[in-house]
Length: 416
Image (cartoon, rainbow, N blue to C red; front, side):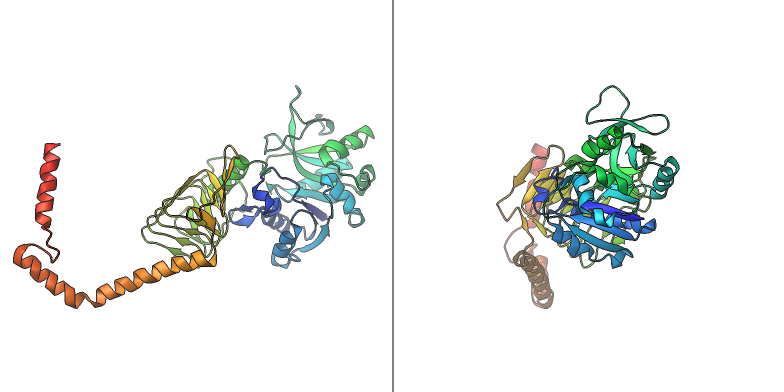
């Protein structure tokens, strides 16, 4: 069965982050959220995938190519305008001549699609919606009869027990007749009401699988936490982010993952769950706390502290900078709770990890190593002289009496 992934990037709930990164390419544990969905489809045997593109679609196509890496075939449908979720179906109509599944490319999902197909066929439905009892970040709700038939739609709670629309559908091709040409339209608020008004059979299948729309920065943060907890085996009975939660990189202990080609100072303190991407530099006495995700090609300078935050790729974090519950993309910093964003103009605090900064980091490492080498090579000269001075009068050549300092410090402590 063919699957249509809606990757048009029309969801701007995570702006200004999505001004430069389309929502399907937002990283969850250093992999685009759409990549997690393609892996889900590949595992369940769905090899024929259509992808609708609009906002910054070139970056999506450049990353996924024709899909060979995942063992699937991907066909791209580039929209010159934003047509909404239903409009994307109409745009792809010539490729949707048989029953097809629709999924949002920018939501993190783990569900059994074979169950959806069996349910849809048994009910002889023209449309089946995958619904969830718990809100994964959507305001789209609907009511179900005892037999699963959709009885009404709502954007707000209105007295009846709502089921939340996950954005995953199975449609018969005839639904395309209910979508107007070249008009921006939405599946939940326009296509489903049109089908109900025509008395066509629309059903909802209840699922308990993981679902997160990434519809806010707090939801995005929760997705990172859920995936780290799942991979570390710390779910404590909650629904896992994925039945196949994996993290790229070498595992150190149960909850720290480190990518390739990293330079991490021995004094850095890392407390998991933490994920560090490829080609990173972690400086002296850096502290990385639980639920921190560091993207690839990131530089974290000396004595910086990062807690429960996501540092996106190619970002430089300066010395002594303290970051907690934030998303950081180069000079842009966003509060995970309030979604307030700040652009930092001081390149010594936050900036893009440019070749100049990378070179500066390596130069500091080289200068430190060279200084240590010179110190070792000159030891036969200064070490005997210093030892001789110490044996003669308890002093080094700088004339400082360390015994006196220690005693004076002790006396001061006793008087306090």
